[in-house]
Each structure stands twice: as structure tokens, then as C-alpha cells.
Image 1 (cartoon, helix red, strand yellow):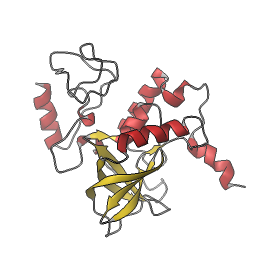
Image 2 (tube, rainbow, N blue to C red):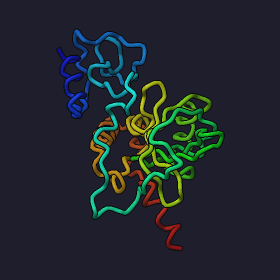
Image 3 (cartoon, rainbow, N blue to C red):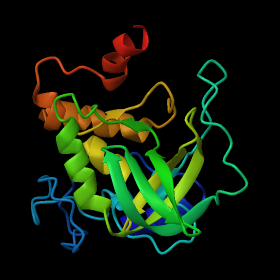
Image 4 (tube, rainbow, N blue to C red):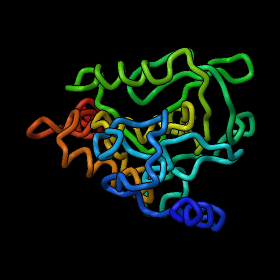
Length: 226
């Protein structure tokens, strides 16, 4: 019944809120792509019924995690800018570089395109957990085939995008593991990222284990004003 309801909601363009914990009920099928969140009473991870956004999608459109992909309100900063005509709305390519936790390089038409993971902000490499975030992202995407869903470009000309590996959202995975902040200033409508951050904070995962973690945008601000 849950699967039928999810299918109807996806067709209508609406996706139910993410459950804070897995039901661990009869619908848990011990999928091979378990995220290992520790909530499921049967498997020790989140099942595809409670968290369909973490699992493979056979659709040719962006997986349901990315909906709704709305633009920021007029009071928010004016970027992301529109994606250039030379950048497709989505493409598959090999990840050939990882600059830090939230910046990677993916091949497109024979060139390495710089991708800034949309909606999140990882600690700077000189911050606590910055190197760990980079290592995590490297293990997740480097050398692998990834699917890119473009959202726009930032002030530096980097493509802002959701990135998926085997149906798993890299952006969301970093937040749920406490290795990235929800970048609320530039993605205020991405409430699912807000939920994942709140869950990671409650569990004191990653950077949330620190008593007073410093947001990367605050960490960068003194350097910009010098």
C-alpha cells in the first residue's frame, strides 16, 4: 500500500516528508543499497519505503529527492544564475577530481566540468571535519560514473548541481552524515536538507559532535573583509 501511495504521489509531483526513523515493518525488504542509518529494526539501515530518495530510480527525470526544485525568493541573493546553453540540464559523466567536500570535477564533452554541490556547504579544508568531508566525497564519487542535474551557476562560474551515484544523492548523504551544512542562504526552499541536518545534529554526527561548530560561511567571512 505504501509503495502504491508513493507512486501516486510521484506522478502528481508531490513527495511525502522523509521519516525521521525507519518503520522496520513488513515492507522492509533488506535492500542491497541500505544506507546503514541504524534505524531499521530488521536490517540496521533505512529501507526503500521510508527513504525512497536514497535508492535507485529508473526514471529519466531527476529522482524525487530533488523535488521541488524551486528558485529562491526575490529577497535571497541573485544566484544561482541560469545554466549556460552549453551545459545540459542533466548528464552522465565520470568524476575525475575532488577539490573539497562539496566541489568535484565531472567529464562533459571531453572536458572536466567543475561542479559545486547544490544546497550544501561543507567545512573548509582548514576547518574541523573539512578534510574528512573531502575524503568522504572522494570515496563516494571519485572515478565513478555520476549523474548530474544542473541547477545553475554560481558567481565563480561553477555548475551548481545535484549529483547522484547509483541513485544515491551525494548532496543529501553529506548532510545526513554530519559532513555538510544545509546552505540555507542559497537554497531556502530545500526543506528536506533542513530535515537531514536536524537529524544529524540530534544524533551529534560528524561536525555536530563539536560543542560549537562554526558554519563555513561564517568561517570565510573574516578572510573576505581583510
